[in-house]
Image 1 (cartoon, rainbow, N blue to C red):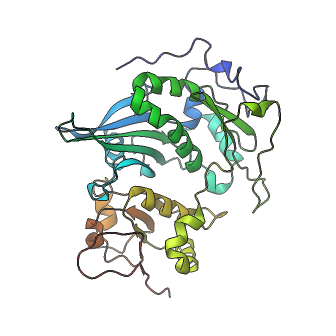
Image 2: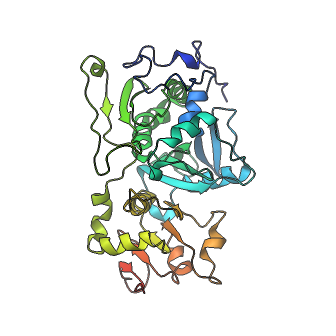
Image 3: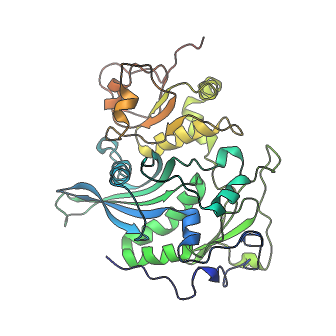
Length: 375
């Protein structure tokens, strides 16, 4: 594998050739925050690492590439990432599939914060603050027929691991870099990571210009001081915006209307269940549908923060599978997104089940939303 060289100008070069590179305007910290200058500091403010998960006939799923190479993942974290980065075989996801998962970091990992990130966290709305015990995984999975391979299929996932719940931003970043990565391999990934290491810090409330492989993404992260119920529209500034390729209206929101359209008539009741922290399982045909439905449920109580555990995509290989499916105690306060039909049996004692889409279940067709009446 390749060694990862930092570009000569180092991290402090910032966005010298990008729009809005003047001090302060690109979201670089105010003078009281000294900007990070070490290689990979800026990258680490956004991502923990980037993984490529492939399929090996002997090993099954395996992390083939890890960038930056000094990134630390425990064996347990790697195992969880491997299983969560591939759709269940019954999903039959051909072509490209994007989804998101969330997993608990190993207890051996220190919960230390970069003091700088702590300061950035302070201005975020409560529902966007980092959870020190969890990572998010943003996945771009490709499965295409390939006669030259033993299995007859090419299967690979490009995965961004981050503490930040910026679903919309990272899905867009993956949409930009993953297709080219599958064509050009490691050197392309190395270049993309170097680009991310030139990004300004994720400062809430500033307009940020994020260059990535020849395009510039323009975003604004909300602050806790924004007026509730309003969305700050990114102001277009003429001279800088000739280069902007994408202006994202949001960094974190999912399309609630689209996600909830299959269960639209139950929406108020689902809102109540989430508000009360009731155990809830979403059974969907693919990880994209399970993950966006779980994320929609969690965000539907915004601006309140959902404090229980939630797993946008959960598999039978998860290290917490036994804890969450045991029948010896009442189901925990958690929202699980699953695609494996096996869960229809293991979770049938759960009080609230949402079925999205066309899931193949033998026998009679189960109700779409099964909800225990609330006391």
